[in-house]
Amino acid sequence: MKQTIIITESPEQQGWNKNTELCMDVKTYLRSDSRMKAGKDYHGVLRRDVTCEEFHYNEVMTFVETTNQKRVKRNPHIYEGEHITVTRRDDGTYHPNFRPIHTGPGFNVAQYATDVANELMWALEGLVEEE
Image 1 (tube, helix red, strand yellow):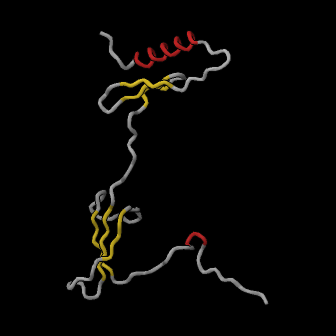
Image 2 (cartoon, helix red, strand yellow):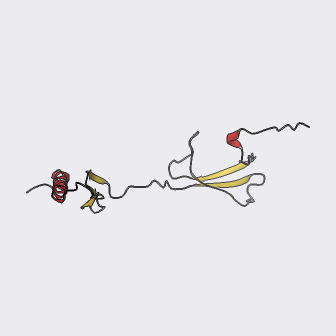
């Protein structure tokens, strides 16, 4: 006996519970716009409120837009060299950081120290004014 399977939803809609809420008033609390704009996505929380006496036939929903949680990069890199990086702290000070040192055959301590000193000089040349 052959079994027929009918897919009623497109693959991108599977797993979603689709509903149409009729006669609904939505109160919005927006941070980015004074009124919602057509076609714009808003991130936030939609809550179904308890039915009020003044809305006899309508459901009341409240949408609260959440703050945009964009990550602010702390301590941006001012200089990225082969041996060191220099970052700027929130208070405006500069902080040199060493990259991992790969010691092995042919590693020359004097050459490494010279290279680090040169990179530090190049990094700070444009940042610090000489008196």
